[in-house]
Length: 76
Image 1 (cartoon, helix red, strand yellow):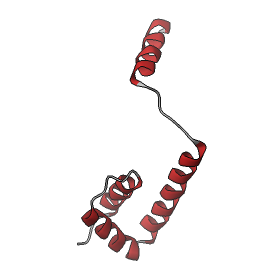
Image 2 (spheres, rainbow, N blue to C red; image 1 turned 45 degrees about the vertical axis):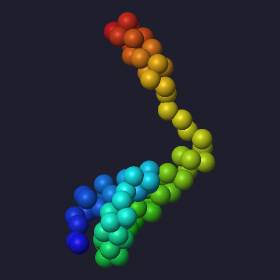
Image 3 (cartoon, rainbow, N blue to C red; image 1 turned 90 degrees about the vertical axis):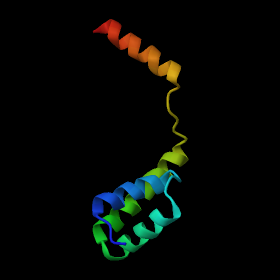
Image 4 (spheres, rainbow, N blue to C red; image 1 turned 180 degrees about the vertical axis):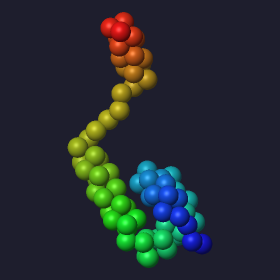
């Protein structure tokens, strides 16, 4: 049941994107119960995700990424 801080941060990141399983979340909650450092990380991570959602940030499409890559290669 006990997990490392590294695994806890990985599960925390997965849970922010709704990719963590129920069992992962249980393990994370148990870890956060006794680890102050990971609890702080988790709170900051949640806040960052919330701010990004509110800002309406989006990612480039694959086509735009390829165009940008070609432009950079031409300039080098």
